[in-house]
Structures are given as C-alpha cells and as structure tokens.
Image (cartoon, rainbow over all chains, first blue to last red; front, side, top):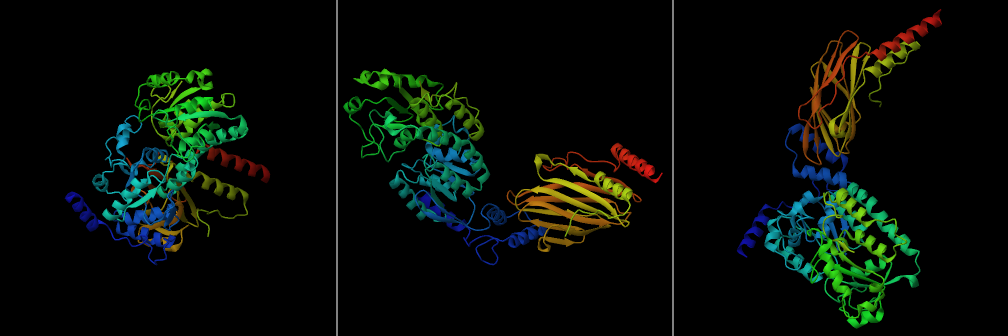
Length: 394
Length: 186
C-alpha cells in the first residue's frame, strides 16, 4: 500500500497541468492552421527537438481537425479527449486483437494476465506488464505502467469494471477510462471506427472493414432469405456442461445471426443452466459445443492440433439419450473454440456456424481461408490454422 | 499566383518548341525511398537569370522544411501563405500544417553555382531527416548540370540523379524541328 501511495505522489508531482489544447494560443478550443504553422516555424528556427506538446498539437490538428474529440463509448459515457493516446492499457484480449488489426499495438503498456497465457496468439505481449484481469485487477501494476488511457469492457462485468474505475479515479484522475465491447458483432464495426478515430487509425480501420464487412454481410444476406419457420433448431452449449445461452448473451445473438433458432430462446437468464431432459424434449437439429475455458479448456492457438477437441466431441455423442436427437443422427454436432467465436474473431466462427447450419447455401464459403487471411493480413501472424491449433471439430 | 511555370510566349514556333522542350529536358524528377516525400526541380533561363522551382511532394502530415540556399541565389516565392514562411538570409523556413506539396522558387544570375541543402521534420512522428542536396551549376546560357546527391542513410535519400540537359532524344527533336522549319522556308 505504501508503494502505491509513493507512486501516486510521484504521479501528482510529475503530471503536467491539463490546460486545454496545446498551441491553442487564442483559447478558442481549436488548433488552427496559423497556430500550428507558427509553432512549426518557431521550432524550425530554434532547432529544438520537437516537444511532446508540439507533436500532440500536430497530431490533434491532423487526426481530430484541431479540436478535442468527443466520444460516447459503449457504456454510454461521453468523454472529451484533449490529448492523443500515448500509453494504453487493454483489459481484454479482444481489444488487443482489434488494436493489432488497427496497427496500434505500439501504444500498449499493460495487458490482461490472460494475454500471457496466449503465447501463440500474442507473442509480442509476453513481456508486456500484466495488470491482472477485470475480475482480479492488480492496481499497483496498472499504475506502474503509467497509462494515460485504459480500455475496459462496456457491458459485461459491470461491478468489477466500476470498482476498477473508482480506484483509478482516486489514484490518478487524469487516466481516461473508455469502455468497449470489441467482441460483439452487432456493434463491432461502430466500435472499431470509434477506436480508430481515437487512435488516429482511420485508414487502417477502413482497410479492416473492407475485409470484415463482406464476410458479415454475406452471412446476413443469405440467412435473410431463409424463412423463420425453416430455420434450424440449435442447442448451444458453452464451456460447462448444460450451460447454454439465451437472449441477452452474445452467443444467442451469434446463433441467431448465423440463422439458427435457439431452443432456449425463451430462457430469462442470458446464460441458463438447462435441464438435460429439456434438450431431449426439444430435439435440436444442430448442437454447437464451445471449448476454450472452464470444463472444456482445450484447443485454441496454443494446442498443436484439433485432436484435443475429439474427446469433447465424443463425450457429446455418448450423453445419455442423445442418440435420439436429430443433431446426433444427422451428424450435426460441432465443437468450436471461443478464440474464433467469442472474441474479435467472431466473424470466423459465424462463417463456420452458418456453413454448418446451411451447407448448401454456404458451399462457396471457406472459413479456414478467412481465418488464414485474417491472421496474415491483420494480425500479422505467421500461423497456419489449417495445420496448427484446435479451432473446430469436425 | 503561378509557381513553377516559366514559359515564355513567343511568335516564333521554333523558339517556343525549343524552350518548351528544353524546360522538359531540364526538369528532373527524383523519387525518394519509401515513396515520400518526392522531389522535383525545374530550371529555366529567363532574361539572363536562372530560376529554379523546387517541389517537394507528398509530405505526410504537418511538416516543416528548412532549406539553406547558396550565396548568389535569392528566395522568390512559394505556394504557402506568407505567415507560413520565414526567410532570413540564406535560410528559408517553411511550415506545412496540412502536409501536402511544397513548391518554392529561387533565382540566381548567370554565374552562380552552389548547393541547396535542407531538412524535413514530420511533426506527427517527430522524425527529422535531411533532404538530399541539390547541386546547381550552369554555364553561359546553357544548363550544364543540376544534380542531387545522396544523403547516405537518410530515409529520403535520392535514388537517382540526372545529368546534363540535352539527351539523344533532345538532339533528335531539335534536328527534326530544324529540318521542318527549313522545308517550310524553302
């Protein structure tokens, strides 16, 4: 605790006084061309190194039209940014993954503890300081990274997020906390554009959207042509046995987006633990089992191949009474890893779901190609998911 | 205001052709590495004095250019507002808050030779890089040499420099113009 107080004092003493936009000499809350031009001339004349204030002014002029940026984040909180982001802490892997798509990882100074477990997917962050997790944050480590901005969940784990925010406000009120859910398909494009604007990565965001949006719109358009009463019934099971998903959860939305009819769509709890008898009664045509954590912590980028997923698959087939399910009888049971369904890579998982649900409609779609292109072009990873890792079975 | 445009009207077609083609030949494009910034020099002889238009293109983001012109040369004008230019003796400072392209003119009398040296500062990245030197030299009425020299490890080092003003193509062009004119006279 003493260490934390010393750190806090050091921050207070070292923090520059926030006084609006740099080089806004007439205080009209805009850095004009003349204001920046004369600052540049003065710098050229004195031959001094470019000060951080001057490069900030140039950055704000270039990326934010010389004015502060007003952002309303996913928690519906409006923040006015008067300085660019220089030191960023990302509390979750989806944010980190998205920042990589935007070529913005050079700003990262702190990552979630879980990132250190993802040595294959996040090799460049294995030495980046860990700041714990949303559920068990290491505030001392977080403050030691000297962030100016923290990105944290917008709609999930609200209590934990709020506790972190309150502590940060006490420790260093100048740290800006922004909330994003960079894993939810329905808001992902908007969030990517917003984050890109904050970080001055609009060009990178456009390039990524040119890749992402056709994938999503192809699924959406083809599914739209299937009448609701002809859609396949789906039992989705999360990492733990009989824990399903219902409205209010991201997995329910994903099943529906891919054209499935969730058999537990009327559950009131977004993550209901369902009665095994109910599954037998509702007779799903498709079963989707997610692995990657909890009781099914197998597969993903760290595993050498998809063999780890086979026992999970076989255990589903052997569940009591499941031989009566149409899904089992027709070979429509699939295992998928949350790395490609519950994260910023959700569009890859959605391609798999859509193809499994309606193979005829998606015969020309090859999710593995999408996965490879994403890793190569946007994640800058030399990783072949065709031969490595465990993402889907069969 | 027009920059880098030094054509001279004339009633004699052959003279116009020669002037235009000479301008073409003495226009040297130098492509910088990493595609930014690129630089062009155009030279022209007007009423006994030489005028050079130096263009630096594709400045990405707010930028500053510092140029030192050699003795005997004078800064004339640029495409920037006056508030974004500062000149003191041989030193010219140019601010480009919006980046983009910069053109500025310098002039000299017949005998002046020398080297324009400069540097480029990108205020988004705080990177400062030397610009390749521009060597200006000419003789009595004929352009002898405009060249750029490499700046070693500079990111914006010049890949290629050009030599004398007239080439085989130029000679062929002039001969054909002369032949055509002669036929018309006959």
